[in-house]
Structures are given as structure tokens and as C-alpha cells.
Image 1 (cartoon, helix red, strand yellow):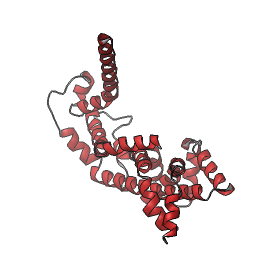
Image 2 (tube, one colour):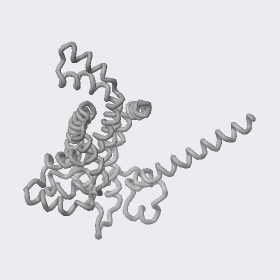
Image 3 (tube, one colour):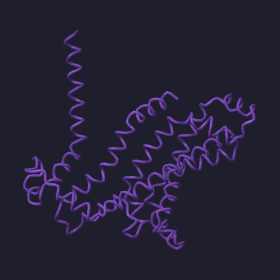
Image 4 (cartoon, helix red, strand yellow):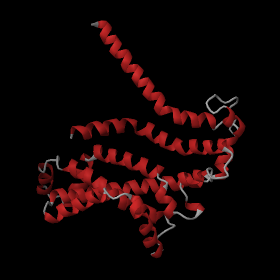
Length: 275
């Protein structure tokens, strides 16, 4: 019996080790090649670098204008996620507490909009907002992220708020609090687990998004990090070491965000599952 348990444990650890190697291998390959020259990458892409040469990182930092790209990505991601959390939580609260035919139609419309792939509306989207002169602006991109992200966030908030008992709100209303006060002081703090989950999903989506910023942000000064790294890849690109260094620099902020939010991620997922 004991040998059977040991075999099961050994098999489990072996399986987890294989999965870990599969998931970490692409990032490890990029990291190793970021220290190599072009010739070394072509000859030995899977071996360790001979020396830790940081010249690729220096060149990538200057060519991709890293400080501008980082500040643009941080600004767009933070403001977009904050706007999605605020507007979608308020909308979901309204749809749950004032349930009627109109709120049902609104929720159904939001859920239905998630089935439409962005690629199918991409061309008319660019044409329409281009004619309205709403392109090439970080605020316009934030507005678009709000529009595309509010449906899923509202749907998730809607399911969570339905589990919140009305007694909490009624007691506050009897004490003289207004509806706005009840929402921000009573309801919104209760939504912390689902808010954390939505924030993580949206941060990963917006930070790594390439297609929508490539359609909206036309000037080089407003480009995000994914757009900046794009210019290292092309038909005539030959220095892959610099491109790998640029990719590593673009990935590092997301890894730092994950490490900081790791406990909140696990807590949010667990509490959200219980609800």
C-alpha cells in the first residue's frame, strides 16, 4: 500500500515537472538567446550563452524607446482596468437590484456581444472612428478597452452580486445612507475577490494586446511595449539577439505584477469559486 502511494506521488511530481518544463521552455529559450550574438543564435540556439553580454539589452532599450513604451503601457493598462472595474460593477449592481425586462435585455445584449470576434468588426471599426478623428490617442484606446471589456466584467459581477444578501443594504438604507454610499461602502468592498480576478484577467489582456493598439496608436511617441517590440521582427530583420532582449524587457513588468499579486490571485480565485 505504501509503495503504491509512493509510486502515485512520484508519478504526480514527474508529471508536474514535465508540465513545468513545457511551460517555462519558451521563456527560457528567449532569455538564453537574448545574451547571444546573431551567429551564436543560429549555430547553437539551445545552448547556454558563452558570456553574459548585456549589449543586446542596451541596444534594445535605445531602439525601442523603452521608457516611453513602458509609461504608455502602464498608463493605458491602469486607467483601462480601473474604468472597467468601476463602470462594470456599478452596471451589474443596477441590473441585479433593479431586475426587470429592460435589465434582462441589457444583460443579454452584453453577453451576446462577447460572441462577436474582434477581427470581424476590425475594418468597419477603424473606418468609423477614423472618420470621427478618434484614432491616435491613448484616451481613445482606453475608451475602446472599456467598450470591449465591460461585457465580460459585468457578466462576472452580475453572478457575484446575486449571492450578496439584500439585508446588508436594507440595514444601511434604514440608517439613512444613500444608494451611492451603500454601493461604495458596503457592496464594493464585498466584491474584492471578483474584482481581483477581473483585474488580473484584464491586465494580462491589455498589457499584452497588440492588435487594437496597432490600429489606434499611429504615432511612435504613443506606442505601447508590444508595438515597440514589433519593429524588431520583419522581412529583413537579422539581429535576433536584440529582438529577444526586447521581448524579455517587455515580459518583466508582467512577471513583477504576478509576483506582487500572487497571494491575491489565489485568494480571489478560491473565494470566487466558493461564491
